[in-house]
Image 1 (cartoon, rainbow, N blue to C red):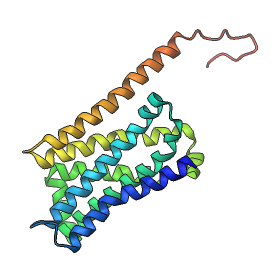
Image 2 (cartoon, helix red, strand yellow; image 1 turned 30 degrees about the vertical axis):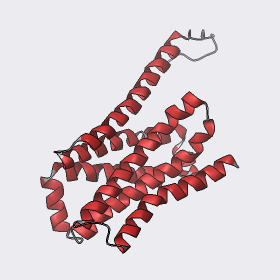
Image 3 (cartoon, rainbow, N blue to C red; image 1 turned 180 degrees about the horizontal axis):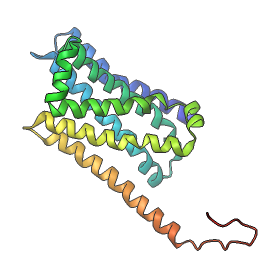
Length: 212
């Protein structure tokens, strides 16, 4: 029951940024450059939700609130949703579906290339987020695939830094948060390796086959 209400609350909260954009659009509140406002807002929320997704695992381990894993998929799907809005704003409102202009942008402007790559990497993560895909891929293969979220986060931060160029405060805040989350995972990975190395190997019986 707790998880159910939490999911409802997260679902509604994740729609608030979109609702605010809609409200501003209806009341001429997007300023002189509405496309830029929409682009930046959807991009910000994509990164925020990616970082929130990456926060679930350490938060679950530290607080021992294991039910948190149940909301990670929803947050990840909302990250993809806002990433899709961010990309759609670019190809529709900015480029008007001009493929020639888009490919020129991707080739000539590195921050577009990096951002496009980050979005493409989100697609297989969103498509394989269901329990059915976890069964099809197998737990370990699914986990390996979903480690792409780390690369997506890194590319997203680089995209933002290269886009802004001047006032780097916000993208550097995202970079710091991402660095802490990745460092935590590296520390846990090293600790796990040491723990496994410290466990003495079980002696092999004569009935067990040797390695080839």
